Length: 301
Image 1: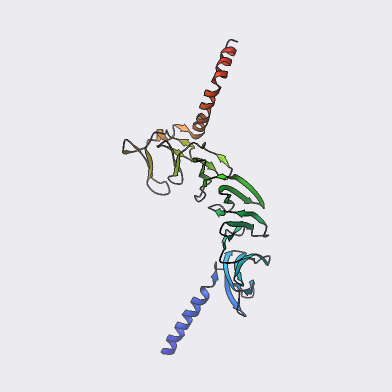
Image 2 (image 1 turned 90 degrees about the vertical axis):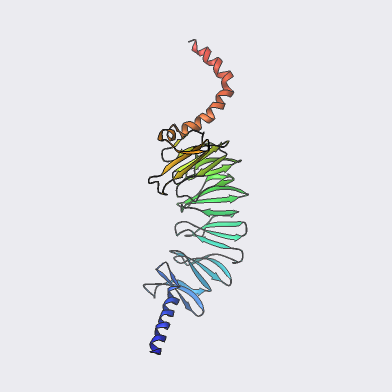
């Protein structure tokens, strides 16, 4: 009985030991001559990574973070190429998939990103590199300012230049809040086009669809799906309901009381007209001494 019990414990231990080394259900860590490599789980003769590393962590289908003599780098299993090794005290490696870039933190304020297929450096000497929901868009900080870099089809495009104090990038769509010169705006970070001008003292995302836009303590509601904005007359705005917008209710606060926002108030003005009016009004005022006399003159004919 004791032998059977011991055998069961031994079997459980061995199973746990090897299952701990499984990578993404397709790869398995193995040890040979005190070095680690990776095999195909379904075909042990298929060596994915040769056994020559002190440690291995899974990165993506073709890439593994490996440790050699106390330093870490990236090993591309398909090409058999080792990319960059750095002292683990100072670095971090973030993997974002086989079709995108891998970010290396070289030291405290020195990041770079490489193409995982060929090792080409695509972003270099940045204070910070961060990827949100998109595999192609990176928020990059250089000299204390943020920008957006797109890396797709082996091409680097700076979508937003490095001049922003804040850029949101975590929420799963391209419509994001940005800050510049102490003013906020909403920008499409995939195209770099402004949706609103930089006139807002405060912008907060309420859920995947709505933002509240603040000017001098008064808020408006922006609906990104319908591209509409309410008037700036509310003390506060909130969303009541579920995350997926099923049965949600928009409430606004005026005179210290909350009430449900009417549909007509939300769709009163389009955001583009509102933005154009904000810019056009001061321009018309400035040019009025010229425009008015000209209009009178040509009005005679």
